Image 1 (cartoon, helix red, strand yellow):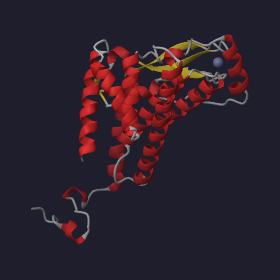
Image 2: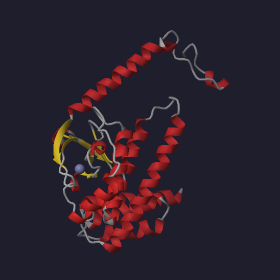
Image 3: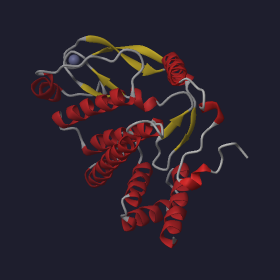
Image 4: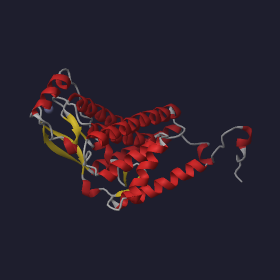
Length: 279
Ligand SMILES: [Zn+2]
């Protein structure tokens, strides 16, 4: 029993012993120091990779994760990867600071001459961007996704690639939400905004992947058919389209040619949907 325990029955927060004579300035300094340390560690996992912009030919450097130095520790239901050391999704987008051409690093070099012209006409005019110093905050990363998405629209990118960008942007927003600290000013509003933005991004991803499934052939943004079908299923379930999800899951589970890892996930998803329907 602590001296101040049981105070919640009066609707008051419990007072913690070490808070009574603590200096709030000191606490702030401690928090700041910890953040600085975290940033320094994140910086250790990054390198500056040199790029030559395929649109304006400017040479520039972009921060990239040293992929061999980070460890994948798991993934969410919708395949969002989680790494032990940092959130690699923050460093996915490459932006040319000169002309504004931007995309995921995977597709940066893949641009046709006709598309380069579209970038020059619609993006480059008036483009202004300063590469953030040091590590990217989540807001920096989200801005870079916005620039990449504007480019995808400008060059009339195919649906699967646009959907994939939305998916990764949604995952990045989820990453931001996970770093918000309960009890800090504006926490509730920030969390609500993140949830809304994440839903918006993932809903767009679902619609885009469905459109791509009807129009394109595998690979879809580098993914095989079973991975795409699983993603559509998991996103459909999230947005209450249980019929779409169930059909895709049943087909995945019975398809022996499907990726075994994805079939396993499809079984888990089926169990979750059934449990959700029961409750
Ligand atoms: Zn450029």
